[in-house]
Amino acid sequence: MFLKKLLKFIAIILTFMSFSFNLKAQISDNFLLLYESYDKLNQIEEVIENSESRILRKYGVSKELIFDKKAELQPTEHFIGYQIKKFNDLRLIELKFNKDSIEEFFVLNAVPFFSFKGKAKVFIAANDSFFNDSNLFIIDNKAFQNELINAKLLSELNQNIILEFEFLENFPSDSFSVDELIKKLDEREKNDWLLMLVDRFDLVSWSYSFPKSDNITIQSGFSFRNFLLDEAIAEVVQDSREVTKRTFTASFKADLSIEEIEVIFNRLSESTDILNFRILKANTQSIVLEYESYLGPEDAASFLSSMGALTNI
Image (cartoon, rainbow, N blue to C red; front, side, top):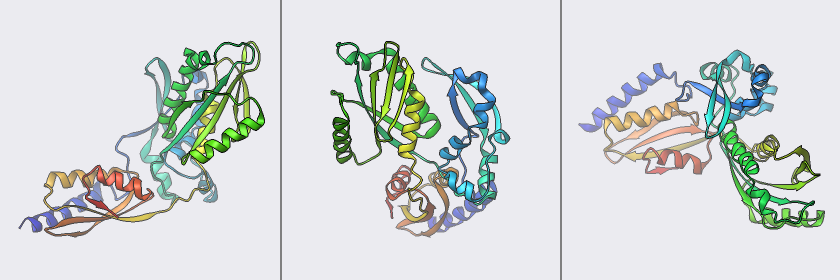
């Protein structure tokens, strides 16, 4: 009796969702939010116009794919407004974009999209060539720490990239030492990582070197946030990475309540990670769903487990 009721309810829910969600991947929030430094408020129009790469990255869309399809996402066409937001002691410009129109652009141009997420470890070694004091004063400097905190915050808000910092005790003093350090880290680290070397250039300027990419910049004081973000993005977002659409099956226990089933269906429909799904079978032992996603097996299993899935294959 319950099984018949369940199957009838599933049919009703799926029919309802076909009208409510148009079986298109959605995001639960109404707007796509991007953040920029408050000191760029006087460049607001330029900031909006240059937001395309960040929007594409937020959705996990390759810029090359957009170019190949001769499509161009115009951020100004999807822009709604902005306001000033405060995070701890940091003021940022919150840019608000219309998610519906952005996703419609992807659909019309047959561009697959999903929620991109990344993680990178940043190894930092600091040195002061002009003074013999302990280099710890650089790491412990409030301005230096604030720059790291702000870089981490902006990276998570705009790029969905989590930065982890690890400070090295010894500073490599020559190119041989740098090469040895990179080799050592490369053998030890399995995931994305980068190395930032901080050294005093003169009495007012500092050099920020990223040996993996051979990039170096000279800045007045501790102002390296944007360069660190660029390096982290380049490390995590590699165009050569394969983006594969996979089909999974997930099983749930059969004695779920109607309310629990509805919550599962709603989450699957609202998630940009799930392209589509259907009921494969439902009996007294289990309810089995089949779905398509660009997620890898581990991330897919973790996402379905958060909804109570017993297995995900």
